[in-house]
Image (cartoon, rainbow, N blue to C red; front, side, top):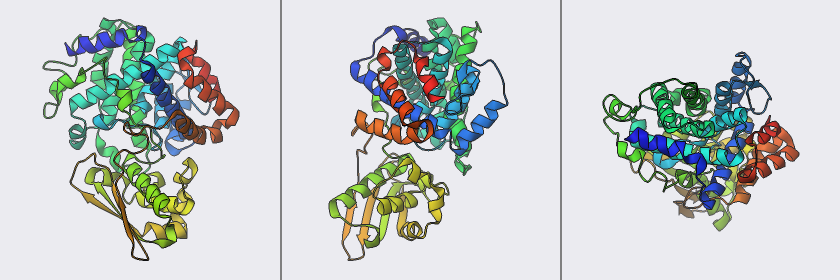
Length: 443
């Protein structure tokens, strides 16, 4: 009864009010992801997506952010999904090892624009997408699934996008089950994206592919495509295909009671997740002890091996932990512009500080936070481990901080006036009659 339970939950989501705290946090994640999409339109993966979509044609039903191109719902979701994960700006859900927003939000927004979906329904759709996608990833094994070279991010994103679009489309239980069946057939993703140095394949796997396929799964079910009524359970079934680590019961654990968006992190820094705790710790040590880069002899960062591999010796600045720590010491803070300035990789001052940073991988808790040890030239040593990084569920960012981060991303692309309007609409989405009113501002 896994499929039926999940399909019932999705089919009735549009008619259920979200608890006020859940609705408020959903709006923050919507804002955070939209800002990532708009800023991502100017990065390599976003530009590649725009060039590709411009060649595809199709009925102009949904908008590609940051350029104004209108195309099919699936193609818009594809492009906007790649923009949302064009770098490391978007949110993340540690228990499932997924980035829910970059797949769920682009798919839901594209469907909402095409169907004139009311704002409150869009919020419920997004929250439902987070609930379903993360649970299915956890049920497949989460980190263990990832360690077997399956992309948990792609699987979770696909089922999250499918659930969100099904809510917007208003599918009944039977058709939601059929949409899930087509999502099962499209479920894929291999972690070979880790060998792509340019973050383009990764943007497709995390955002573009699952957003597009979620739209297609729902569109086919909406058009009357029949399918298996129980694609998740039994043999054959989704979980039977991955028997080593699957725990199917997790797919419905506390569904409707525990909202996974409340366990999803909004990043304070626009850089890879594994370095968030290291930067928080370094910032705290600087604030407490008052040293600068000139006083630093060595910085040692201990990280779980899986996390260290993501941010060690990378050519992309937003994935290079040594470089980001150097820039933080030089500038005193990090912005979207400074974290993405590839030119500063060759800056002599940044290079000298980068050479003083040493990453030490270990085989402890794969989800563990960094330990930062700083040794100064005068012999003093300091150590810090930030267990609850700013933006994580244990230390959430407040709305003002999320808006400030969003403005840092939006203002350079759409201008301060439109950025203010976008923030106001998204934070007030629970009272917006047409979610598509947001689109003209972002185009």
